[in-house]
Length: 199
Image (cartoon, rainbow, N blue to C red; front, top):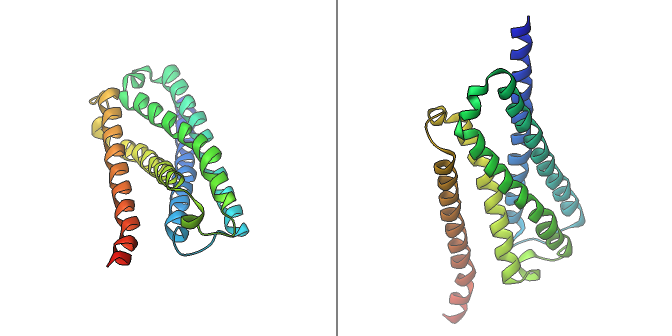
């Protein structure tokens, strides 16, 4: 009976952890899709902003759930399976969630106020180039940092094999490459109308 209770406890923590990932990843994708959809062609309405504000709160809720469930995992491992604390993936995920938390602060302090200020306007017209680049950076960091823990979760071969430093460096390299590609793509799109005007 005790073993069954312990198993149920771990299943409950796992379910909570997955719920946090679902809220965070889903919300991050919605925010990014909004930027792609309305960036050039349509204005930001009050209704759209309110929807995005709700989605940003889902992302925040996902982060809180991840921290709580992650700490419960550490406590569970400490009490019942302490050998799992030596799995470096646990500490690599902690680093990534820390990055996510810092990026979440940027979403609420930088991204949402910029979108709110653009209500009734087109984002591309109302934002400065620096604000656009900041928006692209925050969105890219968000998506990559939410997807990476999911990949780590299914990559069972990394258990007790890769170090936290190697995993963290791999994450940072992938993030840096993705950021570079996103900004290169933006530069290409942003320069195209100018080239057409010259021709």
